[in-house]
Structures are given as structure tokens and as C-alpha cells.
Length: 216
Image (cartoon, rainbow, N blue to C red):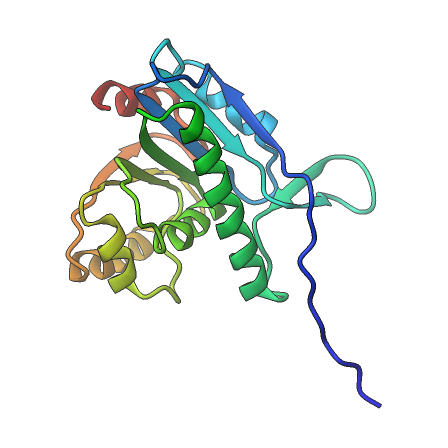
């Protein structure tokens, strides 16, 4: 007899790391999503210069952790794999919705800025495609819209959002060919992203971060 596949939703603990204080005085909330194999407590260190009395940063950590090498040692997290991918997508969309709701309960006047690095870019694109609320800014850093995503849904959600692509010119994972293919899709959807490059590899650049904060 073949086994039957069943699912059940379970409560679990998710982990967030925060810089700055959320309050009615907070004007800008940055929600930053890490890449594959990273942990939020390390990823958020890149954003330590951003918080001030009116700016706060939250880094949610992906729900699935694993050992980066073998069966011990350093641990990383991933937003999803190909296994039961639709369930994983639904799970992290619900998770990020809860993060946003929690943060804006504490900082109801804050504008939402979303920055996503590498694997986190596809994650937040799928999340924001279902958004029924305003997003001030979306920064895709060394990452892009997922190839299987219908761009019409992105346009509907992001037509009033400032969209930026950021990548290092020596990034081994981001080729000019891939960037151009992605830009063609985005332009066809009616979105006009700003392209920001820097001299560097697959990494967060402090100078670019300051530029992003200064214009917010």
C-alpha cells in the first residue's frame, strides 16, 4: 500500500534580530532578509550604522536551519528548498506578514523599507507580490525576482514602490547577462528600478547602505 501524504500546521518559534527602538516616533522601518546559509544575528551587523531615533532595523531569520558542513560546526538558515516548495513559500509569506504586523503595531507611523540579499530577494518578491499595503522601498541586493513569478503581480504590488537593484561588479553570482534579462522582465512589467553598483563581490557594502539611508 502506498503511503498517503498529509500536512498539519504547527506552532513554532521564529527568531528576529532588531537594531533600534520601535515606537510611534519611528519614521523608517527597514526589514532586511538574509541570504542562503546566513543567520540573522550576523547579517544584521551590516546595518548597525542605520538606526537612530527615527530608524529601526529588523532581520527575520529563515525558518529552516542546517549545518553548513557535515553534521556539526557552523549553522546557517535557508528560506526554502525545492522539497515541498509551495508549502515553504506559504509558510514564509505568513511569517513575514506576522513580522510586519508586529513591527507596525509598535511603530504605526513608520514607512516600510525592505532590503533583501541573495536568496532573500526571491523570498521577499514572493512575499510582497501578495501585499495589500504600501511599501516605501524595495532593495534587491545581489538577487532578483524569481523566474517563475508572474511579473503582473509584482507590478500591482510595487507600482508605487521605489525599486533598486544593487550588486557588486565582481559578484561571481550576478552576471551582466542575468541582470539584463531581469531588467527586461521588470521593464516589460512597467517597473523602473534604479541600478546601483559597487566595487566588490557577493557582499553588503557599507557605503551603499549609507547612500540608501540618506535618500529615505
